[in-house]
Image 1: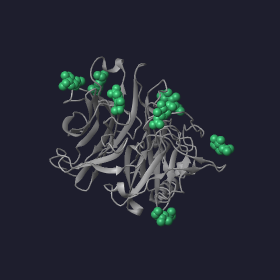
Image 2: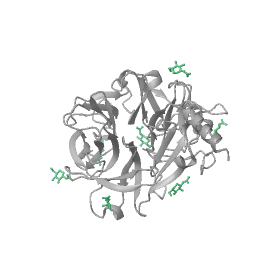
Image 3: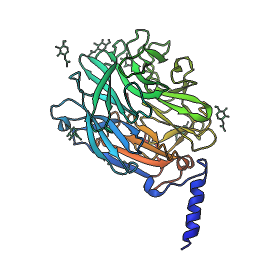
Image 4: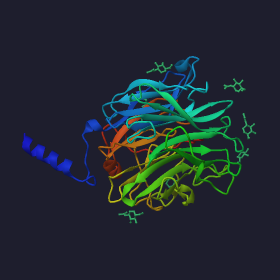
Length: 403
Ligand SMILES: *[C@@H]1O[C@H](CO)[C@@H](O)[C@H](O)[C@H]1NC(C)=O
Ligand SMILES: *[C@@H]1O[C@H](CO)[C@@H](O)[C@H](O)[C@H]1NC(C)=O
Ligand SMILES: *[C@@H]1O[C@H](CO)[C@@H](O)[C@H](O)[C@H]1NC(C)=O
Ligand SMILES: *[C@@H]1O[C@H](CO)[C@@H](O)[C@H](O)[C@H]1NC(C)=O
Ligand SMILES: *[C@@H]1O[C@H](CO)[C@@H](O)[C@H](O)[C@H]1NC(C)=O
Ligand SMILES: *[C@@H]1O[C@H](CO)[C@@H](O)[C@H](O)[C@H]1NC(C)=O
Ligand SMILES: *[C@@H]1O[C@H](CO)[C@@H](O)[C@H](O)[C@H]1NC(C)=O
């Protein structure tokens, strides 16, 4: 019935601006879809996601478990979805080709959309931390066949063996950004004797040779350990945002030992000169709440003139949103429905920018399942906190973490 009217309504909805509520079809949104369930002794942790120009999605994670690698070195698994995240195929493994250490943890993914050095648009880049008792190496790999096969490109940064004690000298947690004519590799850096840990980046215009170490966040307090950089662009205000966790010795902020901080800057290369702002949320009863650990930031045009900055943390199902261009007093918690996970990743679909992907594996302490799961939901619905298909009622997962 009323097929013409329905079609007209459909057109009107599609033509609506991104600021109206688009109500994507139910088939595009879903909660906690399983990508991979490891065998009983294994777990997938620290998920990362990239969208290709074809619209395909790639997901990777760190993976551990004797039943998976059976004596082989650890590798980063690579899954692909060609239907918006609904179904997934394991298409390759990113293996260590140079160190004999394995791809141990903390992957990062990015597809080049413009040429960079000898690398053509459509090249998929992957970085990660390859480590052994002899050191930590942030290594870069490339695929020219849509993530089917991988080739070592270069060592970006090298540090001491993995050891989170202040005074040790490892490097950790790369994040990739193609900015102007360079690749930026951000990472956590314990090599500077003035800081327990700081955030650094290096850039390259050919992916082979790397410029000097540039600071992104460091604190006079030696015990401060800013870590786990992620970066996003906020078009309406033409600014860049970096988020990071900020443990300082054993101190805590409103119950959080790894409070989430951010900086805004005109360029993604100059965060060091911006003030560090903590994400704090005033609860209904007036108490301040601080998100905890391993943040991830993205931006969506949904939510008003400034769009919405969306941040995930390690400990809670919810995400933290800011529709006021990152104003310090404008953060709110919204229930994503997706389970809490250590270093959960976010993504906004490039062609449907109201659709937010939340993807996560295990919690830091282990949830006994260690599966990699993904949710896709409407940012407009999230802001309105409507209940989506299969979305459980709002809940706040309270669990301790360390990172
Ligand atoms: C999400 O999926 C995982 C893996 O199937 C399952 O263990 C977990 O209980 C699910 N969580 C929710 C909140 O549905
Ligand atoms: C990836 O490596 C694991 C462990 O060796 C193996 O079981 C799996 O088949 C590999 N997958 C692909 C697509 O190569
Ligand atoms: C560590 O370095 C030592 C000395 O060079 C070497 O003998 C050993 O094979 C290395 N181990 C690994 C896992 O790279
Ligand atoms: C970790 O680093 C600390 C500080 O340098 C050092 O005292 C300790 O021996 C290191 N532990 C290992 C296992 O290397
Ligand atoms: C944190 O607390 C533990 C246990 O009380 C103590 O051993 C450690 O030295 C403290 N660390 C710092 C950086 O204060
Ligand atoms: C305020 O509300 C939060 C969340 O419900 C609760 O955890 C906290 O204890 C409350 N604080 C006070 C002072 O009642
Ligand atoms: C958008 O963000 C800018 C910069 O923070 C701010 O000045 C402006 O008031 C914001 N607009 C809205 C509608 O929140």
